[in-house]
Length: 332
Ligand SMILES: NC(=O)c1ccc[n+]([C@@H]2O[C@H](COP(=O)([O-])OP(=O)(O)OC[C@H]3O[C@@H](n4cnc5c(N)ncnc54)[C@H](OP(=O)(O)O)[C@@H]3O)[C@@H](O)[C@H]2O)c1
Image 1 (cartoon, rainbow, N blue to C red):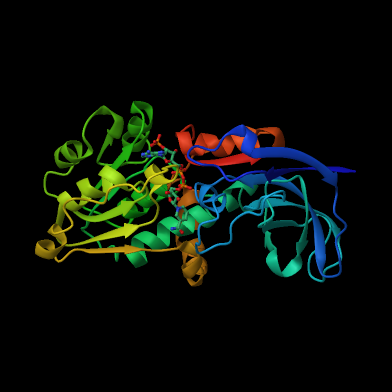
Image 2: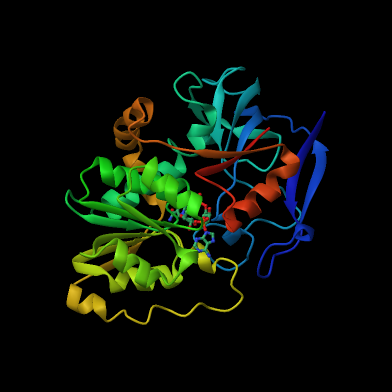
């Protein structure tokens, strides 16, 4: 049987190009002792994967050239040499970008397709959901009454940040996104108090208009002029959680830093980066609190589903371009 998998051929400089990648045919792997063979059903594509395509030193190893790339995936076990995982079980694991994967049982987490749609374990109830929860509640020390601004607000992480803030009693929730349709979705469906399209004018001006009394928390998914605008609107004691800076991921030269960092002195502001991987202790609490909101519809989510392993790369590039609303996943 043939397995199709995406390999990285060369390290992209600037925007990744199709010729940096190849969809390669390989034999379906044979699971060893303690492993299961998984037929992947949903693959995750995430902005952080751009970082793994470069060989700069980071918190996670670069993708190896000429080998299958990796990423979140959920699939069905079709062969098992591992105790506790049976054929027919569904598991979440980290060997995406391919149709079949031989996965060590200790790196596979069983998920229940009756409890939630399989794709939700990659998004709203998975890594991006926990990122929103941990970044807002722990890193940004959110408290009731805070005015919260989130960028990338129509994306997987951002849409959840804004809604968790609203459900936990934010005084005002403001979001920015890259199209008028996304802005409408934020206000009409997700219950944001105000939102703006960052492509329609200077971010600082639009933010001041949307948050005339300033902001207490900024959840940064974008960096660049968004971060500078947020520092400019920060209230005394404000907190900025740096989750991502997607506006610089394809830069070939270092992006200029915010010009107004000195405002952190007068506001006693705090700016702190975080990685979701350091916050998995919150996973049970996250599922317990957010699971019922998702089930009842109090917290709404969208997914952009692209079909077919052959479209895995386009789906990834689509996330960098902003083609997605909510979590981008690939359905096999
Ligand atoms: N720290 C962590 O542990 C962690 C974990 C997960 C994710 N992240 C980060 O969180 C952020 C969101 O990730 P996600 O998975 O939820 O992705 P996402 O928001 O679903 O998708 C990325 C979005 O970024 C926006 N974007 C692209 N280029 C932009 C630019 N130049 N300026 C402003 N917005 C731009 C696009 O939407 P528009 O149409 O609005 O432009 C796109 O839809 C990313 O920065 C990611 O790296 C960090």
